[in-house]
Image (tube, rainbow, N blue to C red; front, side, top):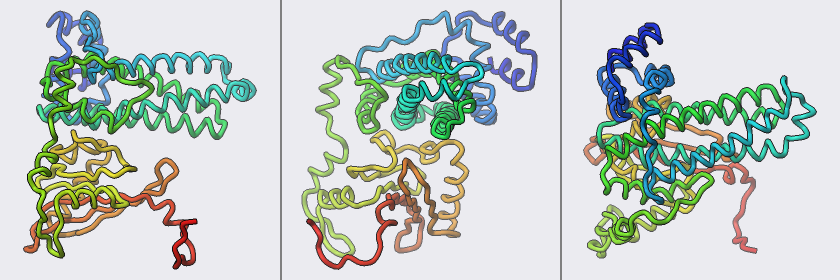
Length: 396
């Protein structure tokens, strides 16, 4: 199987390779295809190269994949919820495609104005697919990484970002009345989303069900509500004993909290562990701490998080917490902090109408040894608007 894909990447004829595959094996399982791509990456084939020809891989194996039934997990199971979202997205995409057809060929500005309200609503609804992908990235991918299966984090996340960019362009061109470019962007996004659904339901989900234990699926489900859901509400009914196990299993932090009710001696005072936790969650910033081994050790859980976080991130290799296109920046910061060349790094971005300030600090002990990196993110939108002075209490 790997040799066929290597030949494909070397530019060999697609039809010849398809025939070689048919001669080689019938009924190849999705898990074998996923593991094959993982092994190719382990052997040095770049993730970008896998991504570039991902659709071609699926095309070669499509006949074998079609012979297999799609997963049928019980209602309430994380995979059931993902698939429920897929059916919802297909309905929205069908309505969007039908409405785009009414714009004419080429699309006219008059028809666009007539249908703009409905089209704008559909574009906004389809954009909610970002939540579906964010939940995959923060809940499912970390569990797969624990099994040394990093392909989805590197390849699928990059495809998610492509879809996000296509949907962003669709929204922007809709707002600017650039009808032709809007239609092009929407058609590209819809096709890429449909391709992603196929990859999920024929490769990723079967592989995940085969790979993860019941306990790991419980962990996936535990953090889902922290991220949210796209269009749907998860069904009830996943085995009651599983639900009870989730409810009755205290988190590690809760267990420790019960054991350490006394005050802890800090550099400048004494606080209980509960007080420390309360202070951290009430700070007007998001905190994430990565230890010296590059694994996420902590994140603060304030009421208005800027970036999505869930318990599945704890212990995750930090490079896998970022889109593939950003990993080189992560490596650059960590390398500079560890070598002592730098102690801080900062970025500021505009996100959803907010001005976000992101800072990274090298955390060192009293001997100057590197102990980790602290990420501090803050919404500065209101702060940037402050002028003059306010010296008196104004609660009216």
